[in-house]
Length: 441
Image (cartoon, rainbow, N blue to C red; front, top):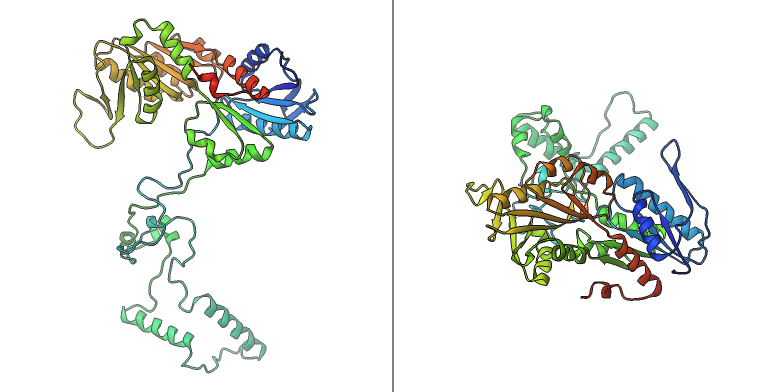
């Protein structure tokens, strides 16, 4: 039994909370976590947390936004209740798949202005859609200052009684008058009383633009759009709520840990997957570990190297190439899998489109059996139906998110228990022991 510790569970994964509490030998903290009729979260902690080491278990599954707000409310309530330390335990970290990249692949932030670009060749898509420091259009002929001066002169004229329609005499050697004269001359030169001006906002309403103007606003490579920086935002919300420590498993982007100013322990599900391969796949030495995309190659090669197995990679080819026997739509296999058992390894399966297409390609290349080993099985939308109709023989996931309903709908699904890993990690953190030694072999 671990003393001076409090395990507080959210509503996202109550089964995992029970497993962790039973492993540590501590009862779960009594609390009331409901919602008002308007939808706002209501929390009441019925046990004392003063001076305790509190661990809040809340997974990023189901209603992700509601669960995340509940987590922030629980963290804040524990800090208000004078908890000694508050650790957020998130088996599946929410928003971990949204990197902080505010530019598209064609555009990149420029440290200085390019020197070999025609400055009159910019288009609407060539600049960020947020307002810049420099004016985007010619605007008024005399600028804003000239407009203010004109308004001030009009006010003086009205005060002096010169409002009978008679324009008072004006000097012709001032800067404003010379600019106005030059503008009028240019307008008369092109054969129109006033030169046509437009702003980038007119691009959204093409009906008011002429054909020449439409041609001017042809999009070019550059800044396409700005996206929200969800990674930094989520990290700041947890930190500002009062979290002192984060424990999670298999972050989709490991660099996510850099967004925090507090310690983050990223546990590995690799040990569970390796143990399953050794104990449940016959002749696993002859099998091939396959990464369904280039992003998971490092994760798959780590398992293949530890077990001394062969490795293959599925490459998503997006260029317009000819579809041959070695290519299934836009996916290409790099490696030999003919007559072998294939083990697809990935960290997360949401819609399951990637692993089902990869399984189809592997079976087409001559694989006898195809396993899919996934750390986080979210299975949103029609993912279960897609798996049932796919070429996958078995899908192995951990219970980092609730899997009871998924197991009922999918006979191919098998679940590995991850609660013991989190319970041991909580015990080691509480006693100040090493976490990395938990994965030493």
